[in-house]
Image (cartoon, rainbow, N blue to C red):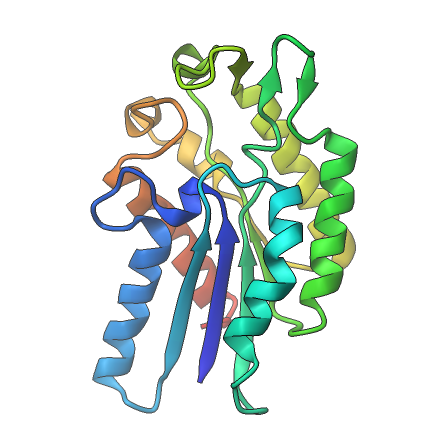
Length: 215
């Protein structure tokens, strides 16, 4: 059996998608594989929380991981997937500060990596999607704050660099997503993808995992 734990914010949870987002699509894909071949057994946990940041994730990671792994057999594999950063990059136009400053974000990611290594060597980061600044600068549901593609890209790049330093796979979603001809149409509120957008993320993640023989 392989346990797959996926941590992140609302875009991991699958907000605004009746299909459940990219993680649910990954689960369905693996469920179908194991129904066709009983020797394959995956359990996928979607541990996305709306609004979460690297700091919030750091505070809950060990407890949530422990609860889902403590009864496993020793030969069972664990894969931990992180996708975190967009809410860290949220900019408060009043204080002129990000929700989690870039330097602290980097420190938090390193702590997450160090904690995850207590459970498995199979650690993967999934990058974020672009942002439609025209819809979330400022943010309608948080009028004093702004999401911006520039900030998201900076946090994404910092994550990719840290992954390279730690020899951990980083799945770039930002650039393939942005290459879609209609990519802004896939971000109806500026941040959360449509069902088509989530499907695209799933395909990018799935293809990477298959190519690198992680699945």
